[in-house]
Image (tube, rainbow, N blue to C red):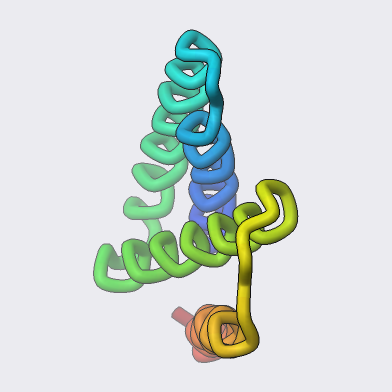
Length: 102
């Protein structure tokens, strides 16, 4: 269940990123606050079940993964092969932690 909370916190990062890219200040603030609330809530829940030494790196990895993919596919930012390889390594690392029973 802790992993589901971490994934939801990573999903909250999407709202935060959308808020940072908004041109309308009111929308920007709403997305940033909404994303922060989602992230805070689910990180708190995850920390009750999994050690912080695991939760934080996973959350950062998932947030990085989403922000790079959103930048590339939604906002048209350039993503080269080397960046894609390292994104894959982040993903493999998260899967490795999951499979190892953390």
